[in-house]
Image 1: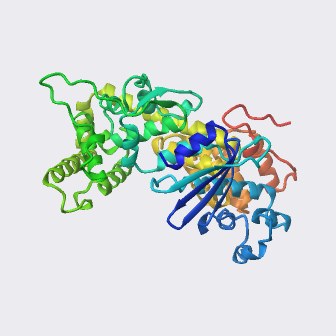
Image 2 (image 1 turned 135 degrees about the horizontal axis):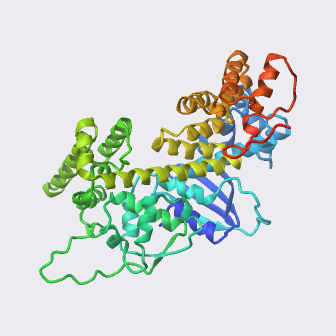
Length: 486
């Protein structure tokens, strides 16, 4: 498949060196790789260029951004010129380059009609000890956030997945692990889908993710269908409906799974979803399956199937958006199933939280924010999730205001935890809001008398002591044992 994720898979696992050329209309991008690691990008898209990225991250002032062309020198990169002239620091450049790589690559994921060509190059030498951006994480996040596409089904449906390497299986959710357990190396993908009760688009995206992370490989090409027992009508596989337009084929494939799906599965939401999540999911499904989105000249057979699907989506929304109706539906669905779904969504959130924590430790703050926000969408009741998110946000200037809100949310959820007050106090201190900072630090000491970071910061603010190098919230071994004050 000529898609960005498939190329990333090939380049990463085969440790290739060279450049991947991406063309789509008037969009032109170059992705440079050294032994499988992505090291640089070039793009003609204005909002993806380094100068624009630096400005968005507030690493260059408005004046420098306005005259960015003045910093262009022959045979020198813009980043190196800005650094040499003292406009940005080495850390500023490293953060901006990582952000540029990540966004330029991820913006290519939604499209399956681009022209991609990898050109091997022998000119790059040496090892990349600390790549700015992880290729597997790019693959994982890019596939998760891209919309479903009928080409995925066409590419995967009649192929036989076989187990591959487990190196990146830790990135999978509990639902995805359940799918993975059904892959035995003998059943074609479309046969596996028929054993599951989940939206087809979700299955094809999951299988594509497995493939691009090397968790599964494919054996051979298309498989012949097994003989059908006499008298048993065999359902036509969605991939064989060549006469149906791609959009309609997706509708038919979805329709085929409706009888075995719950209302939550129809809207593709967890059982823990709140009203806002339900409404958002409904509008997303309506944008895909509303009858008005399809051509009026479609055959009556296709129109009827579209109506069936949209009626099912509307009914699922009507029931789940009504508290009383939802309570009755949940009770009829069975308590054990409800608990299983809840635990599944919680496990998924915990994986995202741990990934965000790891990225935070690596200094990859923008990526960490993405993962932590995903975790919080599922677990809005976890004070430590909001606390870590606020810690990360406080290190990115454009997120400082949101960091304040998330510290307050962490405090609301865990008012006994001193760390939320300390973090907010230090944030106010850094912003010059000393009165607010003192108030939060005092609350921290009420929650935990003698807290080292709170004590030292409060002494500095109140003038009792002018200690330097005080250890603050962000210099502590968070979510583990605290460093003892010397």
